[in-house]
Amino acid sequence: MIDLKALNRATLSRQLLLERHRMPAVQAVEHLVGLQAQAPMPPYFGLWSRLAGFSTGELSRLLLEREVVRVVLMRGTVHLVSAADCLVLRPLTQPILTRYLETVYGPRLAGVDRQEVLAAGRKALDGAPLTAARLGAVLAEQFPEVAAADLAQVMRSLVALVQVPPRAVWGKSGQTAYATAESWLGRELHPEPSIDEVVIRYLRAFGPATVADVQAWSGLTGLREVVERLRPRLIELDGGLYDLPEAPRPGADVAAPVRLLAPFDNLLLSHADRTRIITDEHRKRVITVNGQVLGTILVDGFVRGTWKRDKNRLSVELFEPVTDSQAAEIEAEATALLAFAEPGREPHIEGI
Image (tube, rainbow, N blue to C red):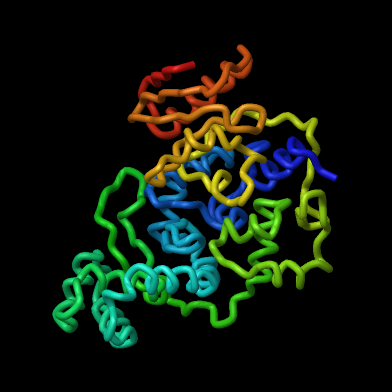
């Protein structure tokens, strides 16, 4: 048996949010099976909220040294993952992207030989990374009957393209440019990646969870068969929740410190039933109609507000009253976040 608060604490423990951990950033990225990264900077704050002693330079170095990459994976969204996980996860999530291409772009690509487009696109990327606009323009010279943007989408959907630095390097700017994962990492995609092991890793980072939760996180369907196959390695809790026998389940009475979660934090996006961390009412205030996910504030383990940063100024919007001690914790975390992002500048905090 497990109640809502105990489920909350178990998930926070897996997510490295009950205490800040001392581990290399790449190890944390792998434990979390990646961090969602449509916007370039949120992974820095996602790691800051989980790791002691983490600095912006650590993740920047990992990007520059090709130990982590930004690539479209789970749910068809950009994730920051380790190089090794890119090679495993991209083949497993390819059905999502193939389905998207055929559903949205299929009629526009009628009569186009996808393999010819892919061969031409790979050749175009052999020389150097290209933006989507430039890649599309190069392909349009060979396939003039198709819009350049649609040709670029064929490549982005059917080839493992990573977004290369300086994009997402702290303090740098640059257009989104793509290289193939194979050329950027010097290795081929995994020929036979194991969905079973990825589901186990999901439970280790997000569990306990239902089959629907695993499918919501991954964007894949038909995973009940996988979970059934894994049943000898799992335990079953209330409500169709599955878990690993050895995974931490610290209990409802364990204190949960205030945390400021990054925008697009996977904790808010990786379960079909998200009430373990946020109420349905509050979710409408955090996830906007155009798909933005605001930075959030955890109080006693649950989302109780949002935060926004503008350089050394951070504004807080609380959804409900908090105690004086909780307000002090929020202010301390906000001050620490600004010191992380804007060292040496006087912090300004509003809304507490």
